[in-house]
Amino acid sequence: MVGDVEDTKICGMSDMLIFNNKTKKLEILDFKTNKRMEKKSKYGGKLLYPFDDMYEGELNEYAIQLNTYKYFVESYTDLKIDKLRIIWFNVKNKDYQIFELQQMQPKIIDMFNVYKSASLFAG
Image 1 (cartoon, one colour):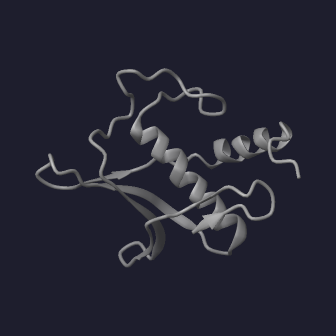
Image 2 (tube, rainbow, N blue to C red):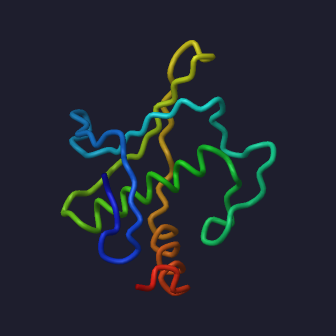
């Protein structure tokens, strides 16, 4: 479990934090089983600020989720996270797929600043 225990009280559960023996760095892995894994859904419009250059879609939404986990880990520990990956399993797929997600820490910081400035999490 990771979270922002001091300010927003937002938390989440990462499936795995691993040490990659090849790169000698930490990675966050999350397992997903949904039907689709797309960057832009057929119904999707653009996301809200600070993600307004991105479209609704599983890969973008999971990128925000895992980047938020990275933000929590790096904010509350001395650990540094290198890669963020989704491992996608689905009964209709013959095999699994691994997606490396884009890093977007400045946008995550902006997201929390917007939430805090809007007093959404006031006492």
